[in-house]
Length: 323
Image (cartoon, rainbow, N blue to C red; front, side):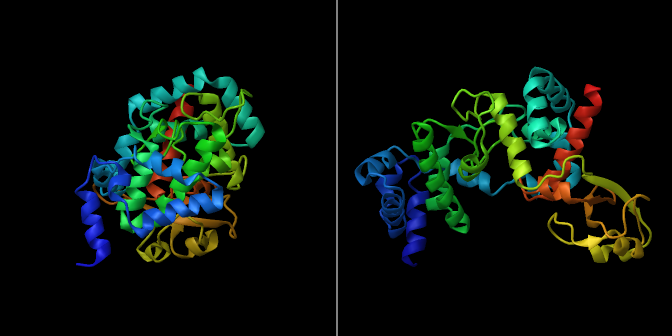
């Protein structure tokens, strides 16, 4: 057994222990030295902080069961519920002024902003039960498949806690370290979080106005096209359309090419329009959709086409109910 494997087994057997009690490897020490050198943290204070950080086995367990692993007909049922639609209408009514301001400032429609917050946290009802620092440290030091990503997010979290004047042991989030109503990762918070109400704080945990503006800014920064279409359901004759199916959500073919493959597209869609053909598994058969540029922008929030479609369909249902 090599040293890295032995160390991982040691970590996993040390659930509940302070991270600093078991993390004595080059990885941990290297992280500390990086924070001191690159961001001018005090090494003694940082090591003292990590004595209060815990490796959490439930976080590791949750990483193996993401919702996006479900087929569409099951994934869809998680979000397209009466409670989530009605909750979206109420959230919209409660925050109408902030949504109107964000829509005007960033060009992102209110229904999309509301749906994102609805899918992420059910309008703030479920923002996470883990300390963010525990989640990021657990995945950074005890989850090899994605340790590089989560160590970068841990770095970003410590910096943002200092910038925002937060105690890094206090903020709560998801098992993956996502924070607040919109479930921003620390790097997203530092890049996109906004203070809409002008109180000097970017509070995405308990201030819906800041969360709304932060989501809108995220989409605008990822080139959302105001007023642009998002997705259309389509039909196809024969099996040739399957040649156009591929992973991801980025438009990778033209409307003209899909029509040649027997896909029936909206009549007004220009032949040169870049689109993405998407197939969603039902209990029997599949639903075909095309995603356009704005659909791809939704996947910048979460790369899963399942997620993007859930957001889009929930946004449509909420908007229709509100009217």
